[in-house]
Image 1 (spheres, rainbow, N blue to C red):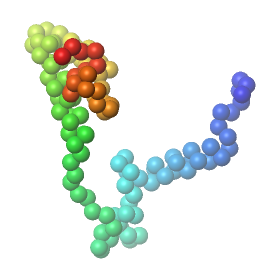
Image 2: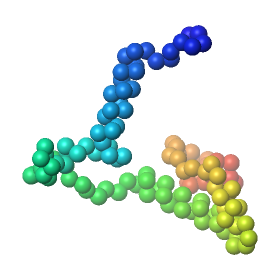
Image 3: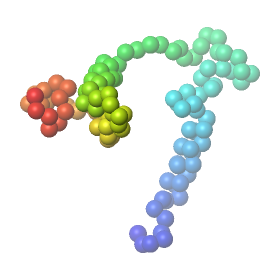
Length: 115
């Protein structure tokens, strides 16, 4: 492909346009209005969908570890002038991800950190 040539095939552009249109028809969480109300704006009776509360163990563990990492950064930064900046620098680029368990690394230990 040379300079100035399109990276998108016509059928790819059509798919991207359809995707963008579909996204405008949903809320940020992906819900469509027609799943909740009829053409006249009244709630479906009975409802087509129902909100339920579920607990995701992975999300809970990731939140627990995120809280622990933030707490460690706060303690390391202290409370004096510049503490907030120090904490933000310590956390810059830090994300909690899920990886296959490595028994040599241990549970909840950052890569490269000594146990």
